[in-house]
Image (tube, rainbow, N blue to C red; front, top):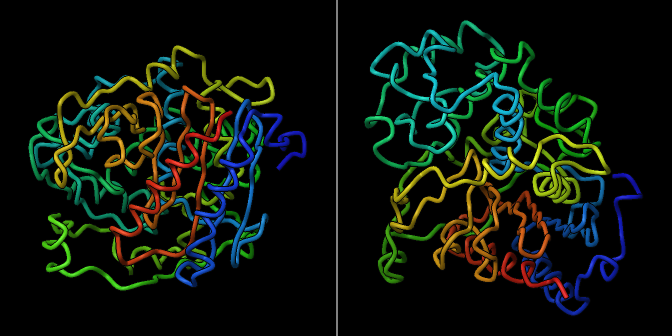
Length: 383
């Protein structure tokens, strides 16, 4: 990270005591031996004021962001919308002809970003991305689980593979090259990767699983529904310890970063760019934050989905169910990732947070509570 992007926390208007409370909370599970590593950063006014690493992590470490990658992929696609090369209303089949099977011809580009496309469980192995014929065969095989646009159900990876394909076809550039050339390089985010170069593998922290999973009885005792099974299995997560998978640049969950660059990325999404380099104009950024999911709700907690163009908007008092802190403003936006990764910016304070850990807690309630606590402490760090 450029030295000019580091600033004293107080000079950015961050409260010393509140920052200390945040860092103690981040450090807690590492000190207790639950998590092997953690990293946290706070940024404001285009600069990083807090950047700390714990356990096996160092400032040079790269941690998988998992679904926090979705915001990077989506923000790259925003450029095509701004340039008139892509429209939310157009049908995917008019871009990818193998989408003409099993009723998928009605799926729109906009539905890919809002998880309303109707194929949340469509299978796609990361290494299939490397073969265009295999990609197209997969698109043709996919079937709808429900009519597109009628409900919200999180698509862990499927819709993002299609967005990456759309980016390639409309830009004429490979997906990972487009992200690097149009977003990451201009912003000089040298420690954020979607598609890891072979030279960077030594910096990557391996994922591991920790803790014990909750039982059905545990969920009943807490009055909570048992989470549905998804493609985000331990096997799928641990696959990212393999160099070949890291190098693909899985658009819905394969990005790697340190917390400082991830926090700076969100500063760019707030301000349009960094260091005087504009990537997105303000009209594009404001439109991306417009909630498109209407009154659709999630399946587990029946809370408003609040989906913008590939990002989640904090919204009402149910924001903690959407991955934000209780003290975030309704305008905060971002996208967290599997394993407890946190990434958001709050326009009310100008603060962006990034929290990364390679340790995936099998107790997903404990993991969720940790995320809410860290975000809640971070959101009030402004003086």
